[in-house]
Image 1 (spheres, helix red, strand yellow):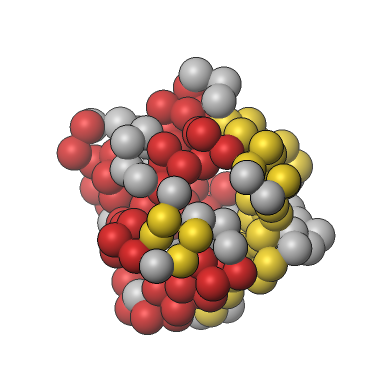
Image 2: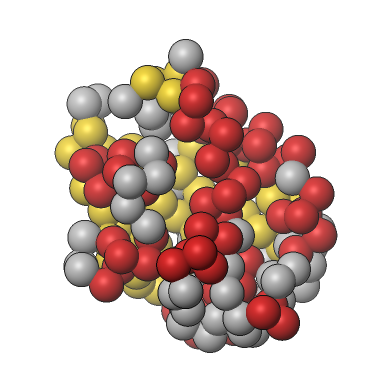
Length: 155
């Protein structure tokens, strides 16, 4: 079992992304770099960057330069990873913050863009910003891609 946010866990994230045909199919168009910063974890703050675009998805440790920054505390990040809290609810309640080039969310279409609903949010009937176009559509797919990682994660 990999500890949440450890280098081994990030490797598992990268493997899940690389194995997802739906995610790779959706990752067309311009690159979007999303830096996740998780504050206050057991080992301190952790940052990593997810790169999406050009038909590729990668996860890189250390939070390199990014177009978007997503910041949350450890409890929020763990709750999202465990499926106990949706990313949309975390944003809506201010537990997760977004900064940077937010307009880039309109640059890439996700595989279910026509439906206007995404991933785990679809069951709840939640719509994201620009839900039917752009990078936002792809971002709502990510929860499903990394869901299997939960079973092998120690929190």
